[in-house]
Length: 217
Image (cartoon, rainbow, N blue to C red; front, side, top):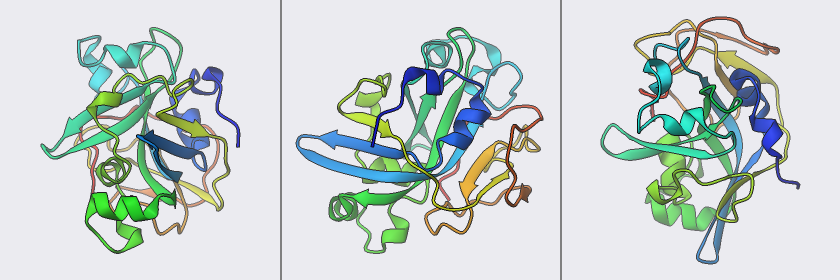
């Protein structure tokens, strides 16, 4: 499988989020490799997105979202886990895709040890779960996922029909259809959405989304 060029990420965020389904997320740490196929994502943008970290402009926390596409943007949420996002859009235009769930491929035994669970289905079916299972934390904030040997993405296909819904756990911009997932995949997270349209494809209209309140339910 081949790696993704920066041009893949430096596009309209919802398009990137949809096309990231099926890509393989790889984490290499001290000779241990884990990987998983992406089965669920959410798109977030900037000033047109009331729920986004970037909604109010550039701050120390959000400057990563305004920079070069293809970098890891990590943040701590609910006081107990990290969420992994990949920056998108052209320089100066904020955007990021939250990786909400992956289907484990390599290193499942190590994922079980890290998560302390036996059921494979519970290993990576949420944004906080997958970062714990794959040992993705603050040391990787800002990592260039186009060139990195520690954290990167490989080309792949969804392996099933793709559906779209509103994003999970938001109190604002709840109508925006910017969550994408592989229909019927058992590793898609269990969070509730406001609405979804089965098998919807193409560019979605609407307002924007948020990195602030991503759910791990």
